[in-house]
Image 1 (cartoon, rainbow, N blue to C red):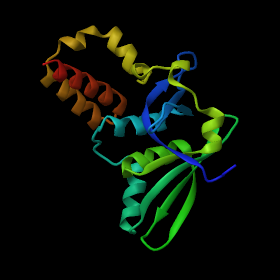
Image 2 (cartoon, one colour; image 1 turned 60 degrees about the horizontal axis):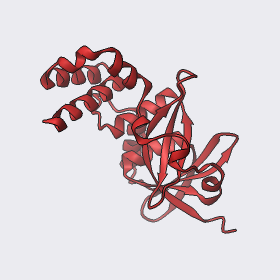
Image 3 (cartoon, helix red, strand yellow; image 1 turned 180 degrees about the horizontal axis):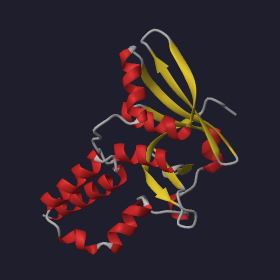
Image 4 (cartoon, helix red, strand yellow; image 1 turned 90 degrees about the horizontal axis):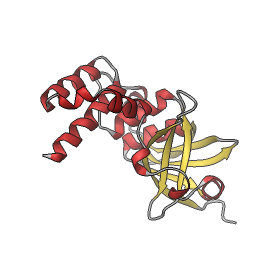
Length: 200
């Protein structure tokens, strides 16, 4: 078996565990295919990934933004990220970097590697063994519309008054939430604003 076999994937979204609070998962989907891989992550990592997916502008750089900025200062760029191994639900990754002459790989948690890759627009790959071990077809577990945070679902259903606010008011709330570093709320408000604008 070719150990170098790998599959390019993209980040589909964030889902959550309805039973165990604070447990999230980032869902990767095979590019040009249908298989998906769920990787369990913590709240900080989920927030970091969701902020980038929703293009929330933060007043100060988050940890992964800082890491990428530091790399750029030393003329380093991300070539790709590889999800290389899964051991009892724990995923291991490599971040492949280059200065244009020399390439190096750095061991990383999968969640951190993904958060960095989406900021650097770098390709994410899943090695063949991992794909065969944990890959699943979408109808087996989740549907795309479920790939949102629990707070987004809860607040949307329990706070219907927010829907009556104008888009301008929602924009102000989103900006205030980002300024207060409540990025999860900012991401939720941004989704509401985009849905309202799409209906116009």
